[in-house]
Length: 84
Image 1 (tube, rainbow, N blue to C red):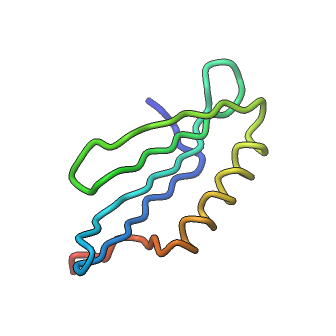
Image 2: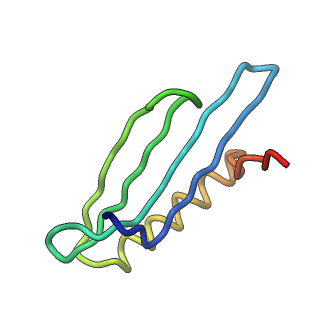
């Protein structure tokens, strides 16, 4: 079972522009003792695209994770609203 060290799921929606996007980030251990930054994005309801970046240690991956999280927040991505 894969353990996620850091995980983020955010969405950006807009009824006027018919926008419904998601962005997902996670930092996970890789098989060689390093860290993998996994990025997934696309339209909500689809599988979207995926890109994996490999790093020698978790500090580098976490640093990049935080930079990407700040960029997405600045572009209007927010956590999904709860159903309650």
